[in-house]
Amino acid sequence: MRAWQFNSPEDGLEYVDVDAPIPGPGEVLIDVEAAGMCHSDVQIVNGYADAWLRKRPIILGHEVAGTVRGLGGGVSDIAIGDRVAVALPNPSIEQMDFVNGVGLGFGGGFAEQAVSSRANIVAIPDGVPFTHAAVATDSIATAYHAVVSEAGIGAASTIAIIGLGGLGLSAVQIAKARGATVYGVDINSSVFDSAREQGATDCFSDIRDVLGSVDAVVDFAGASTIADAVAAVKLGGRVVAVGSGPPEAIDLQPLITNNVALRGSFGASIDDLEAVLDLLAKEELVPAIEEVSFAGIPDALKRLEVGPVRGRLVARPRT
Image (cartoon, rainbow, N blue to C red; front, side):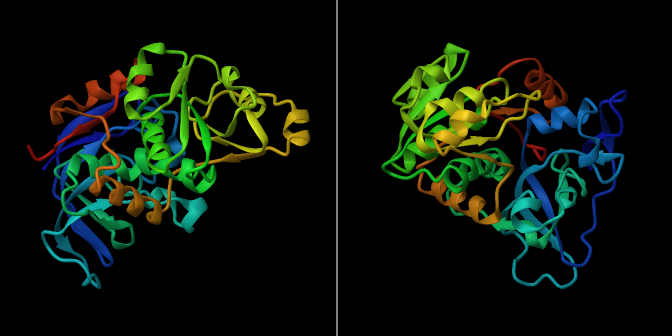
């Protein structure tokens, strides 16, 4: 089968023809119908995330959706032909081994077929395209976990989203779907129209423009914004950090005196993914998708590396 394989930053992604994987006990073989691209893939290819890889060479691609092609021993509760997405294991939520995920421990979705543990398989509801389900597994589910599970956003909430890239725009939609008032924050004002289309009431270039007026801030930028985010929330508010950046000193005084909760958020649970797929089925979430060719995956990752990409990039390995 055709695949994009990674061995070292010097070699980059290599186009290879390899044998199709065989599912072992408790595993499922999937015909990959859609594979999303993520900044984590960029970090791996550039050599910044060696700890995430269980083996080399490895086929990358951890945002995967497709149809069940084969079943390993002991798997009897799903059927050949079922439409499925592959959840990315989250060690902090479900005590799973992160490197046992597709594209990390197993060969991933930058190939015509992939194998996953049955424990990570989630059914795709009717009407949800494979492309939407693929990006739901990581980027949308990650945004959902940050907004709902960590920030606790509900109908009466006011929230600011810092960083209006793919994850941030998903977070805007999710918060809006829950009835919250949403403000977008990004240094790039060209994304403001998109954020408003997704449900943002207004947009700003600086989180200090909403000083003291929001219940929560979810920060996908991860630059020098956390300290200002702490000052921006109301008494007893929450700040959720998702994006990572350079070390930053935080003034503890407003954190303490305003009783602000500062939380980190990484990935999502299987329950989060199932909730996101349900929202997609109801069309309460409509992700911005750009399909790229299977042959164009390395170029697509370069685009993610050098500049902002509106929406999420997805390839169809079998077309």
